[in-house]
Figure 1 (cartoon, helix red, strand yellow):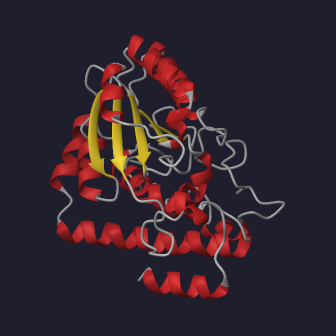
Figure 2 (cartoon, helix red, strand yellow):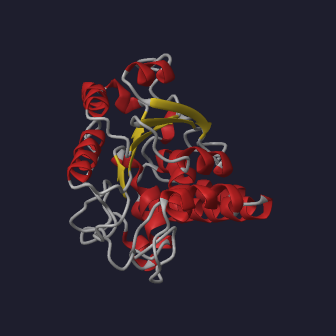
Length: 290
């Protein structure tokens, strides 16, 4: 059995224990160490995209802090037995941000770090969108926007029927909130009181050019969710909000993020939605990520 980011066999803590871990065991030095790991993961992501000559780097940078906090501090899992029934489930609905998930899964020993070097190759398990049939630790094959949250609702409902109290986290992009399937899923989650479900919104405003979403907090409230808003790059704040545990309703966490966070040339720059760096750009970005 597994808890919070290492693989030795151990009794998984209760939800209360996980929340206490967040509050009691992360001081300033640990937060600095956590941020340093994410910086290295961003370097890994850059190199993956550079070698493959493709990839959604900016989208991955937008969510990497969220994923690291989840896998390092909160999720219950066993990297040696990814299908363990006692695990929490995480579904990356915005599948094009998969380089962040790949980097975290490799760091947490779901597969060898050398596999990252194969990203985008013809025979690699690591494609431009995650495939649950090829990659250990991936719960759902995603990429068609608006599909991951409906799947997460189905998983949460199935676990409730089975009286399995494990948690289900789903990360969606703000662009996905244009999809009707997102709000249909929210209505269904609220109707069935899926208190184990937490929907995390990567609110980096990349969709504002085509459709402004307005007050997302109010929208999720109107759907019957408990809602919190947090800085999506603040590890301590993320851990506190995500680790607070379920209440009586499904939860929504609106994470304010910056697309391309960490590389000034990439931040909030639509040109970097899908592209790889040139030699000079790679050198400059790696220098910035120190």
